[in-house]
Image (spheres, rainbow, N blue to C red):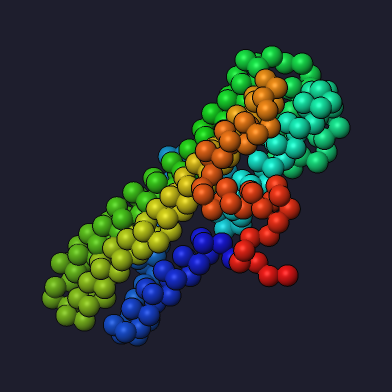
Length: 265
């Protein structure tokens, strides 16, 4: 279970429990408010962005719920193994290892090396891919941040509508309660939609994007080092700057074929 699901479930649960403690749940349900807030926000998003960008955002959101942590230590181990092969058998020998490389980004870099591309070309091609990766992620994040801005605004629209209706029906005391409820509940929906859905998802996608970019930058550094014929030990020291001390310890165990002290047989 990803942290996205845990956080969403925890947030929704706490809000529902708070509502139950305050009163019956149906007191916080208003179909009019839902239409104003959700419908208005979605409509504005459709006006603001092309359909293709909205579709890509939906796909990106699904990744936030399924994304697994990237194993940097496995990647470094593979780069070191490739460096050893390149030093012993030459760069062309890396072509036989392409099928074992899981990362499409790393596979592309190794293919460029095998094809005889110079280091400047390899660096330019790979950095361009990283740049447009950030651009693609940024478009989805922009949609979510915009939704986080629109939702409270439409909550205020619902509040104004409810207050207008209430003022128009001051003579009818029975209509004051429903009108005021619509006014306040719409604001509640807008705030919840912004702070429990749009903003957290935008921050999660931003964190995942930063993680993937750093991962690819680490791969690029390793690929360029292999191409330059650097010593595998030096490559390892260089790539360890991308990971934490805990991951460095895990890498030591992977390379030495041992288990961490906390593991049991």
